[in-house]
Length: 315
Image (tube, rainbow, N blue to C red; front, top):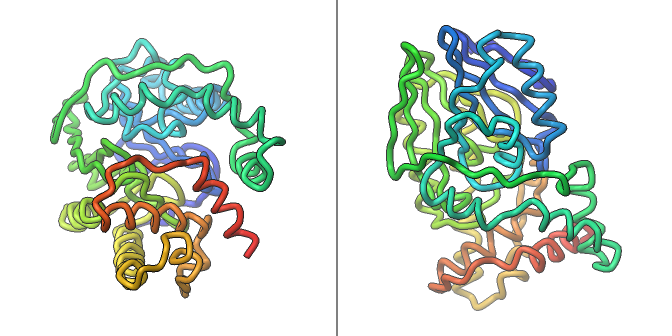
């Protein structure tokens, strides 16, 4: 594939399909997409706040008149950096998986805003949380949820373009989906793929994530638009799969030895994965694997995990 520079903004990737990328791809700096056919348009994800989403939509309008009105919005999953900007396209048909829509309703942006306001009282965790999220604005957002949901698969016709939605969650979150455009041999992966950054598994099971990677690898795909990081080809999918295979192996050894999840995460030598952005996410990945290995279905304690990631960064 032709190299697409990893710069902020809209990048044409062929036949009226575009990727909108936000370097550096760390916490909250996510990618989106636009598909156009004639005067019809489909947006893949909004961004973390209204300012970022508004800027993206204005860039799209300047590029193609079809983006003046977004007809369909697809949210790939329930993390706020992929749907908090939905209110700016509230007149569109908004589609997600059923599981994602349920999880989105439980994730109001004001919660993040409240944690930021009290971050000075939260010690190391507060400092780290502020470092991750202080550049985003959460207080003025109206939670805008999907108007249509599906399970497993949904095919969309946008003019003459066929777009396939494939549910692969629970993986990163409860209801992750892939957005596949066969005619362009292009896939938008949401946060199933982090390119250049450490993937983060809030839900699992990890077998679903490995299976999602295999689904992509088996597709006739030349262009992979990750949820975070630069546009790539299937090599970034292979890298994510290999990361999890490594983490599974190293975590299971420590789980079987009776080591705690925190001690295991600190003990694992990341090797070549130590150069990935946000390597401290190993704390969350190991915690999720421990709960899976132990049959613990309780949700993760995000506040505690952010505190442990803060300590990991200072080790």
